[in-house]
Image (cartoon, rainbow, N blue to C red):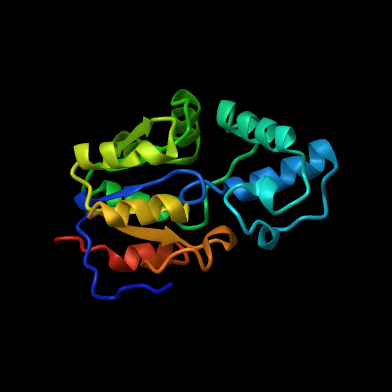
Length: 198
């Protein structure tokens, strides 16, 4: 995994996944698993697969219930932005619309979450597409003229690369050693790849 320093991304050409890129969903999952269901022995580094039930011993139905709770009401579950996301997207919003394409099936909780954590000027620039399927993002990416897409799911990024989109894998334990694509560790590294015209 590496960052291709030669990338120079125009603000209008980049799109973003939500969970694991803008929103710190893994932290919320681990906190809810502990506080509400008494599964407290796991850390972020234990999540080595996108399918959490494959790497930590929590029943599949409980994993699904926790994620459903987060998707249904991101605010009441305490979902927080990943460090740097608010600031970088705020700068980006001054130059171009921001396209967020999420596999979540519910759009309104996402909109409510952005309304709460992001300033109005940033929020007005954000277009949320909740399309309900990890494997269908390519269609929406192409429709919106996006050339670069930031996602934390390695399988999604590999498919985008095969289709001619340049993915940036937002690095987490669950995507390590699952791709040979450009990756970013944090929002500062995303910011360094953006080129803002004066």
